Image (cartoon, rainbow, N blue to C red; front, side, top):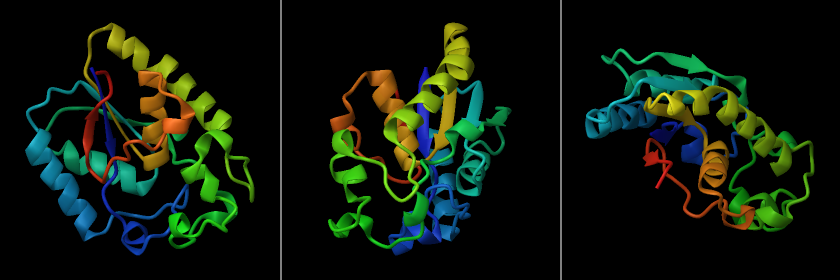
Length: 183
């Protein structure tokens, strides 16, 4: 079985700032959220964890799996989508005038701007990751956990569930939520 978790809260999450690949650590709320998730989901058997190497995801994985003998492997392909010039911007979803707004509001028609990563680029790296790292584990009937980021996790779910890009952000999962990817 494949499980996916979004990292815990960071200061930039709390401030409504777009993080992307900017390496922001968890704040205390994020650490507490990861610990609470450990209590809530600790009974789920896991064999291996793959995590983004960005601090917020890796620390979430470490806190969540504390006390369990589950190996954690990082993979650069799990880094958050690169938001280019817009990383660090505040309240992007409240500003339709921002050129990056359609990335969230209308993903199927988004045209990359300001150095942002495109959806085809993101999907390609995640499809390769799933094919190379995750599918062999699932074929061995292992339970796999991925701890990553909002856009990455939405794309992973879209790939696994074969949902259209237009529905990418439906639903968006909160920090430290554990999602069973296969329905």
